[in-house]
Length: 197
Image (cartoon, rainbow, N blue to C red; front, side, top):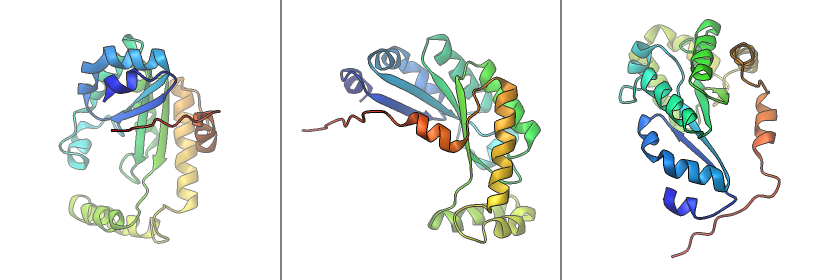
């Protein structure tokens, strides 16, 4: 698929991954970026390997993901920290976010994006069941925070946005509000890739 994408000039391509295996395609990624615009989002929400083993047990360790980010950046492939979702009461503390952003910046990430956990549809029940099993003491706090539905209460989201933006600035990332990031990522002239058999 990447080879096909590389043959179409002018595309904006975003790849989001937790896997360091993305580095095996560095030559193709460089080709895609040279012909258009590419960003590789390396998904990492914490540097706490023990915590992440409980949250995402099959995902690569944080150091491996940072290593992939470092390798991509060294090869000239744009990498971005994808710190989503920020998990309430688990990955939302300012010192932890700051350390994550500093580590990603040191690994060559050009920017960082983040957003608080969003629980739509069946995900809501599934995730609260997970919290009940893995972090039972947090269940009442999650139920209260998400009592209104899929999104955490506004005051909490605004607090995390302020904390993350401050941490991003301190790490040396260009800090922008979520609305500014979305507006900046919209292409002036969208181009639709036509896939035909």
